[in-house]
Amino acid sequence: VVNVDVRFACGVPTCGVDARWHTADAPRTAQQRTEASLSLSVEKLLRAVIVLEKFPRCAVNVAVRVLSADGGVEAAVLNATMMALLDAGIPCHCTAAAANVALLSRAPTSSPPVVAGSGSTDLFVVLDPVAEEEQRAAGVGTFVFRCREGATDADGTAMPALLFERTDAPS
Image (cartoon, rainbow, N blue to C red; front, side, top):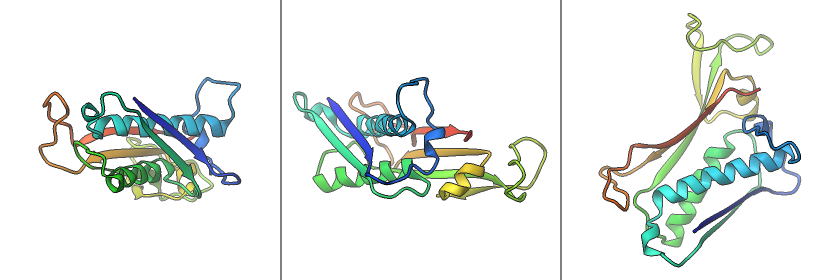
């Protein structure tokens, strides 16, 4: 069993990331939706890397508190979680690293971003964008890679180099 709880510390703004993870749950606040989505991403990471077969009757509980948020929150949370697993000595199939990227246009910020495939060559990728860059981006993505060649899961199946990704266009 893997239990994950991600929460923003009191007074930490979500820096607009809540719009990226909007769900249909109307009664929940935007921050609750963001926290729930981040919790699901961390759970996905944990299930991919931890050797859960070594803990058949145990629960892995992870609590993450976001103390500061200025863009790239999902990648920061995933990387911090992986470092905590390594520090705790929990057996893993592999280590993982997350990166956050944004697709921006060179146009002034007052104009809408140029969408890929529109014929413009004024697009560029920003690694680890700040919140303001995420807000004006044509697209934002978080990519999680395994960091070991030949890593296999419990069944002996080779693990892909890209464990998972999330790509969204901010609203």
